[in-house]
Amino acid sequence: MELYIDSSDVKEIKNLMELVTVSGVTTNPTILTRSGKEPEEVLKEIIDLLDEDMKLFAQVIATDYDGIMEEARKIVQLRPKNMYVKIPVTHEGLKAIKQCKKEGIPTLATAIYSSNQAMMAAMNGADYLAPYVNRMCNYGDGIQDVKDLIEMLRVSGLPTKIVAASFKNALQAHELMKAGIQAETLPVDVIYSLMDHPATTIAVGEFTVNWQRAYHRNGFFK
Figure 1 (cartoon, rainbow, N blue to C red):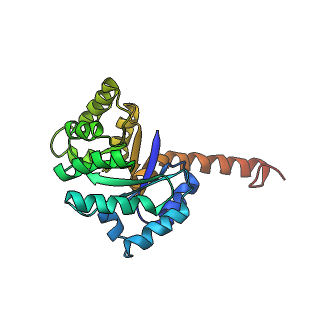
Figure 2: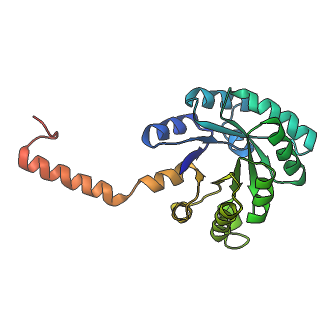
Figure 3: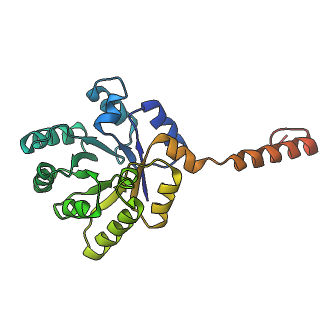
């Protein structure tokens, strides 16, 4: 499974990259505004941090077809490779995804609230689909709808991958991992929730105390 960090905080991204294996970083307009910096500056900082084989996703702001295509062509030029353009699945966005496919611009279809929307984008040539898992739960069973999408893509034989987004807790991420999700993009706090457990800290503390009592030193070797 591919794991992405859903953040524009360069310090947090760097810290997590040292702890876990990630495939890249996803951003969106809201995430970039939280940085307090100009978007070009933030994206440059993230690009400098990533290896060339790691992916970076940046979203268009324009909502009309011509505007989306103009921004998509500029975004994809920010890196020599592995730069993906996020396009919402509006009518104009779906039209743009088709054109991006023709031009060889890698895309992620975003703002997806149903498996049906996702399939339309997949058939238009989107490389990735980003269903908003937690937000979908406000309209029904978001987890199940994404599971349906996994199966729909499998049956259709389409090469598009799902990079599930909009998570609020580790359980949501766990359920989709169990279902065979191809990728997830998670906020920093959810990633830490997946790797941390209070019982681990307790166990390590017990090992340390027992070792010190027996051998009167902190390390394995003298």
